[in-house]
Length: 269
Image (cartoon, rainbow, N blue to C red):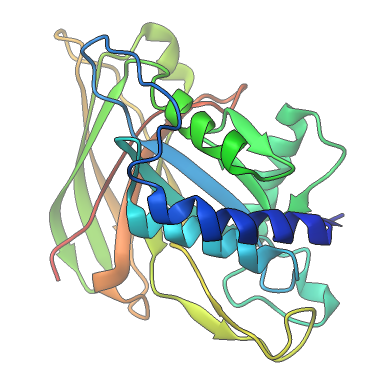
């Protein structure tokens, strides 16, 4: 089911990290159109596994993007999704989920791939990367930030050790977006593993924000002013470190899988 990247991918990523990322804030990657609008956040998903020897450089790339936070004035929302099809090959990834494998398979069908592979980056559901390079990645992030006019806002309203509640507001949504899916993700920073078996045996792997849960929310109709408002409550696992949690709301088209809007927040701790 899974295909493994060749060593050349790791070499490209390592070279990129050594040269492009230290200058990520000032690198003139691509121009953002000056139409008066602010660039919108971009969701950068990485499908990965601790059992895949080609994945650590991709994890490091995403982690450095997350640490930087912004690329050419674009907010990058990093989400690391650990698939489970590597688990049978010597090491069970503690962060893996079959749900994330199924999500990746949806992308594979839309992008016309024969199957799933790791590592795979997906930029706001619009484009994926089979081979990674600075020349390809960063302009795609900037380009995705200019797509669509929908605005999402996410604000925490209440929380407890086992749950969190939010207020969600959506504006400037054309009628066709109401067939899209509204998803609320929980990610956790600061996770790592000492890998004892498999292709990464003996390595300590540090991760970018790892996807912990993904909840589909009911999307009500907009009010007469065209604004959609809703409340959301999600469960939290007490083992997740509250200070490292980030909550991401995004609106995703069901057929194309394009993410047309996104926002993120944290909760007090």
